Image 1 (cartoon, rainbow over the protein chains, first blue to last red):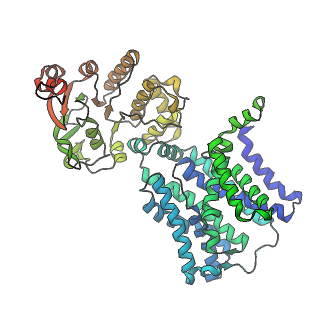
Image 2: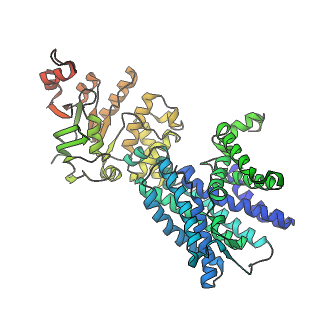
Image 3: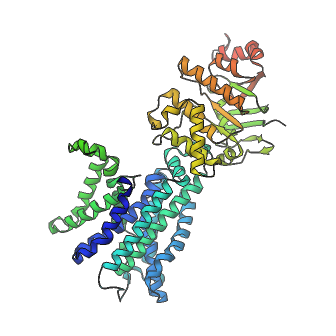
Length: 312
Length: 242
């Protein structure tokens, strides 16, 4: 049963639009799936390889701008941004990796935080390329309905899910986890740690960048404050993974369901205003204290808590 | 040609000479014991040989190749593996996965790496602990996991850093037995050990470090009688630094 769970979930999602969901419900679903992609991408680097990035908005934004600039400057469909992000974001990740991956632990985290901010400021000021704060708008959307957007992001999520699983089961995965657990030990066991950390960063960055390129196409508008946002992208990415469960296959998916629904719920209470950030912060603290391994990671603990012991 | 030559090796940390002008050779197939009081520079010597530190002066030649400036993982790929005095298990991986991760260095596929890992767990007596998370292992077995992991990288030279410290008598005998069987496989070893009975019985030759300098070299019998060694370990009345 458990073996077929991913395929069953995928089938269910493929069939879901046939149920005639409202546009709003489809929009929420698309967001959940997009965040799953970003979460799974971050999880590969942060969860499995142990390199915590506080700057994944950088990759998201570079992907989004790759798409946007293709449309804006070259008049090509922004959808070309998806395949092209693979090259652009990989090249960008290589440069970032070369600079940041010689740092360890919290120093790497701080460096990525800086990268995110640097990119936002650059995008704001390189007006010739990015139109600065005006942002980039796609004037004619590809589709009016949501259904094709849904299937495109679902395909990307499915590819990401199976790719991550394939990687983790292979030599690459063993090396990533070894590096996370003890970099010196890994190095002395013959693992070229810098190389493998760079590989993790590139794969993670490219997947995040593709989600960014999708975002450009789907939302039709980006500006530096949106796609290079520290709280709304970089931090939410970490929360998706932490809430769901780092270094688990389903964690990022569970985390994005919770985070997107929660954000919608909170947004529907106008009285809260920006106080929702306080709520998110509180939630993160509670999760870290009581479920340090996230919902997927601490599943047995949760089952005990709710008296579902017999279920397994 | 010796398997390993350490030539006039010095390593300074600021003004402190952790190693000064250490020279010795290691022949293929032998077990070289390395002893000395705490802080004598034994672990530093290992750290320089396996590339964690670079020598301040002198060089290390392994299989005819100068490895003084080569990165740790490449040195391991050349066939030189080590264990850590302060054990470094990959904590949230099972014992088996620890060894599989190491075996990938010379395995073409996961199946091959897993097969090799099982064989090594059997060899080191950890077969029944394969599915245990390595953070849950008792110290004695963690020390053995260090050896298993190093062996999985297929070394020609194995550096054992206090692999016998803190073991109970049963574990001690098992580990001595394992070292004997590693030697039978033709793997050369260099062993840091404080346990005198162990080092005297397993070593073909011993070198003694004190304050970063090599003060003696010889067979276990010669070392046991060497007045310099006795002074370094027990001190003399004028010199209470012992």
